Length: 148
Image: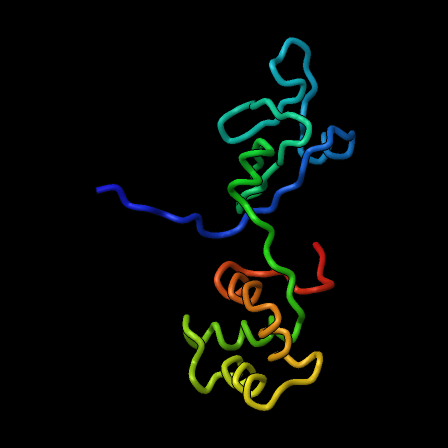
């Protein structure tokens, strides 16, 4: 019987533009006579990389190229969420993989539905961004305004 798997974890990736900065950053070589004009040294040896391909970085700092069409079918950006929503995800997610009945997120959502909400409340954001909230809960997220 064939089992079905999903990818876990996240990767960092940057679309390769052929610039001197990117070639230096990823130690990409330019060659003549190669099928691809650029080569990147991966764990499996030197591999061709095209402009507009993605350079992925693994958990140990290793790099590998991913063709643009494959990347777009395989990966999605993590959702960007407000700091106050992230705080609740961190607090509540640590307690259980399900939202606890008396948890802050559950209370915020119920209060929003029953009593209404003011713009900017956590319940307001969760109700109006429910798909993004679910993705953030399950897959991880980036906090608004935070950059590498």
